[in-house]
Length: 105
Image (cartoon, rainbow, N blue to C red; front, side):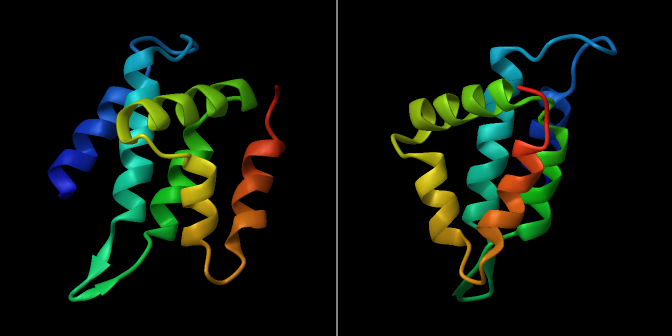
């Protein structure tokens, strides 16, 4: 739900500006990714592309992205990159990954 998404957005924000992400933030980003993958439009399954881009823009570094993927694996027993590829029906995967690869390691 939107309420749960807002809770995850708040959980991913650092307590203080410039503070490093914590495991709570990794879990929150992972949960938001899963919610973006599980989006449906009525009876039709879909993907919330805007939510994926928002999460990717919030993730500060490539190493943080790896931690989010590990949190996703722990929470859902699935590979986040495999799920991401499965959700990119129109070739968005490369565009999404450019957001992450353009960040500091």
